[in-house]
Length: 192
Image (cartoon, rainbow, N blue to C red):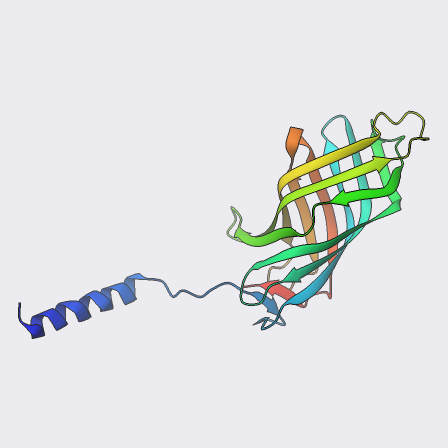
């Protein structure tokens, strides 16, 4: 094959690849609809809980700080604080009062995945929470509990300007995570 023919075949192959390949725009965290250029922090506050379907549930007010990594759709949960006197048990955990002793295996990694509807969700992985309940609480069937979730999903109300996140997930033993939380600052951060 002569040089002209090789160049022609090569240029046709490149043109075919350029047409066939979709434009590869990498996903990013957004701030005011623009990709963040430095790591940013958000706060998430609300009521989150866990349930043993048909048996018991426990929910508490929480305050989370997360770091969004620039140039990516990854990040991490840095802090997870529980307001102990704002916890409520139902069913088999109704008589339980949470002590201030909690352990978390932080930071928890988070990344964006596309859900079945084609919208982005934030997936938080390897969530482990150990709670201790007051010994002097009569009728509480547990002294401590460890809930393990391989993945918890946080679905934003609006992917490009998040104000609230709806949390769900299934953990070890079928335990369900649930709740809704507000993102601060509101409608500032999002995902492209």
